[in-house]
Image (spheres, rainbow, N blue to C red):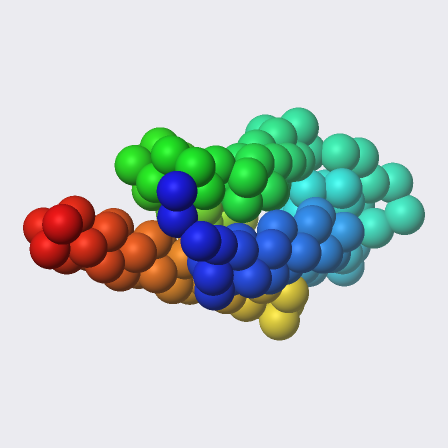
Length: 149
């Protein structure tokens, strides 16, 4: 059994960052004098927004997997696999946001504004990578301990 260490903290920070990101728009843009936002819980014209189900589903899935991953410490290989899948999902979400920005920003007369909240999922992905690295370090320590027995 592996003693939980810093990876639990990294995973918890990633969960918190993704949960906070759900409440803020990633992009805002102006088209024809009207302001629009793009986020998980706010998408559309300001004042008449709706929920973006794909982005919200990705944020919930990433947060949920990272939270579940905290409790998978008894099976280190499974914990590393779930963490890796979580990193891939986070990168997929960032690609989806980039594609949306490219599509919207490519129109004539659009003023695209990147929000600072977009740094939150990037930081969450970094913390997921740090957690994966800490898990790899634990795996190496276990292998070395087993070799000495």
